[in-house]
Length: 180
Image 1 (cartoon, rainbow, N blue to C red):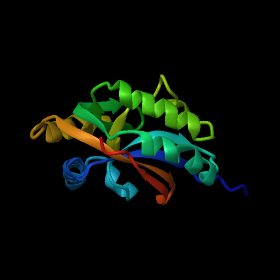
Image 2: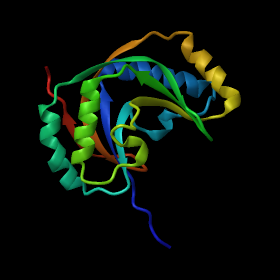
Image 3: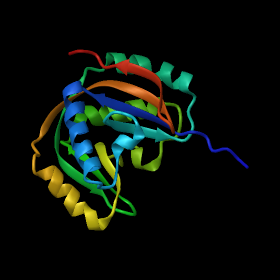
Image 4: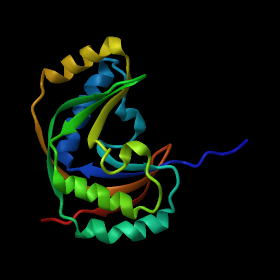
């Protein structure tokens, strides 16, 4: 029996106010039994910069630490909801296009030292914050209606980058983005 390597992720973490607002949305989905909420991951709301099947964590940390420390915090606006359709559907928060965020993504993923999974490659990546996975077609409209009732755009700020291994989620490294 062969053992699959544990995947790695590089994530962007939000400010505490944004995290709390997103956690409220996830809790509402949980309470309504709509899909497998992102809370099951056991990791706060975030945007994944990339998923990697193999990385050398020490090399990745060394390669990105200076880049992260030299990058100012990034402000974005969460503008609404999106869906990655399929079996299962994934419900997520969308954000306004941002050249600074796209540039950071390209730089960090390029420096990470391993092949990034296809959906996270520069030019393909869709920045998003997952709210729930495994939402069936029959419950997707209900989930959107629940979230839409109290929706208003969220002015958010990314404060840090983290390197994770999972499952379960294990934080291997954290670097703070520079205060502007």
